[in-house]
Length: 97
Image (cartoon, rainbow, N blue to C red; front, side):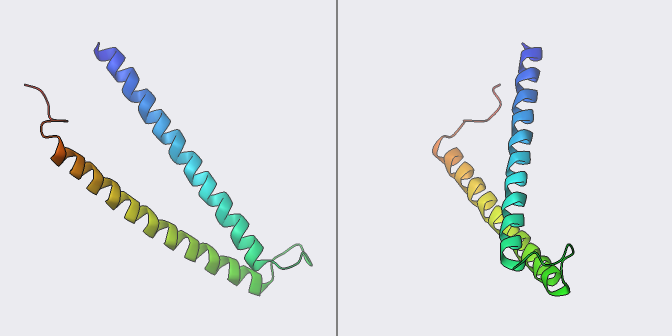
């Protein structure tokens, strides 16, 4: 029984890690696409110009800052929802004696 529980927990952790990796990859791809579209007007040279590089740097910084704030708010909302659910169902999630 304990081994089966451990396997289930490991599977859930692996699934959570996979989901997190997919979310990070998706966020990175969207950020790359949006910042490139915003900052690189034409492919004149193989290297970014100083203006393009500055634009990309600012765009990435802003995107990451906003993403961090959104994650923080979502985390707070999830915690509040969990606390609300626990208040509505006393005894749920407590270890049995």
